[in-house]
Length: 146
Image (cartoon, rainbow, N blue to C red; front, side, top):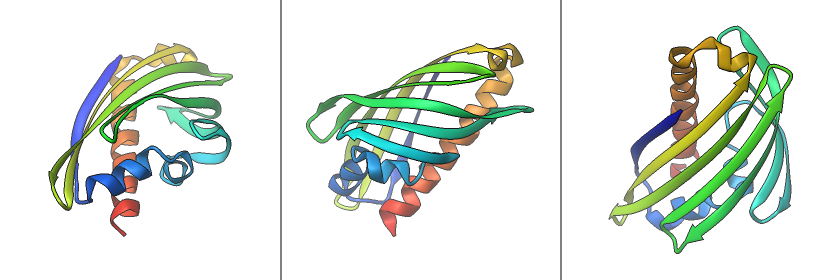
């Protein structure tokens, strides 16, 4: 499945870029995050409570920022597993300055899901993903703009 979108954020580009590429800052806004550990500047492991429909579990997640270009583009890869299934995620984000205090974040994410959660169907999975993404961006905006 591929998800993409964009969001305008009332923040200077430099501040938002520093926030998005600092895993400790980013961890503070991830929905369902229970624990995390930084392995190095670009790699983390975490336990994240998530669910699709009636299936809710804690996923063991490993993530890594695999590419950064200047202060405008980054790629992140994550893998997660729980007894109900697994996911493999590849995401790219691009940040564009609109004004001194406003920027646009564009993103595209490819997710492969397997196991019991994959059997729930694309409509339920899409709705759940949209809800998590909206919560994530709302959290980012609150943190960066406070």
